[in-house]
Image (cartoon, rainbow, N blue to C red; front, side, top):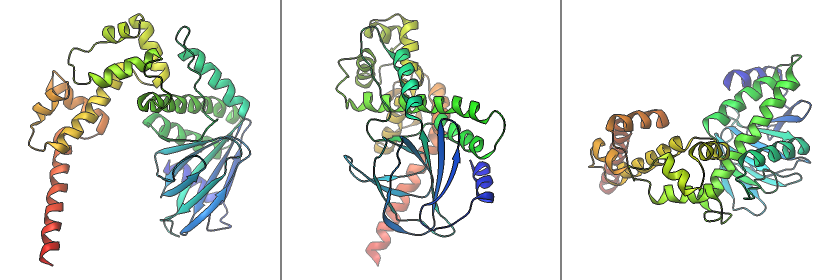
Length: 320
């Protein structure tokens, strides 16, 4: 990301310190790069096409119709329908540390085409999983694949070559699918659409949530809950959520393990592994490091250090 953005900075012109806009065009899309170099409030922005906004650096406070104001940080996306008005605050922007954001506008027909294909791939028999991307505003947390894809998109938009439009078309299709999977996961897990009990994937997610620490959970068991064959279930689960059932379960167990370590700091790593539903401590450690990029012991130490610092600060404040 840094390399691609450095290429942009070498050629862009800075005409304003608030939401300075640089635009790169392609056949089905338009990439806008916004930079704000000073604190500002109530800055209005609106596009005549669906937009995927992706934070790069800094912080925004977003005010969108129908949603409570929320902080917008790097590693997050906001999906906006056409003509949706945004009101934005920039509480941290500085001249030498600007707030930077991408706004990717995509042809509505392209979005509709990809969404239709996604719904065909994720549909389960007579269920009607009509996932949509751009009818309502959404605030999403990006996964690693989305962040990697955004980096490639930025680089390709900035550097012109003969195959640019073809490559961007493929990447934009992938981005739409990744965001649909993220949105589907968000809605299924929060049960915003009331589909826990009305869709087979929703029923399985509820079962996983209710039996997360069950050490005997298997793909075959989950497939039976979904009334599918194991191979069919695996494919539909991964198409819908963008991750395999096992990776999803391990990710949820690691989240549970992190909460355990925060709430019960006296637990040994082996105890945390067992209580989180892992039969094998070595496997737990490998999965934890794969997902969190640090070992459980390092995570546990960071919690203990944070607690010790808090205790010291409280003691100093009482002495003051």
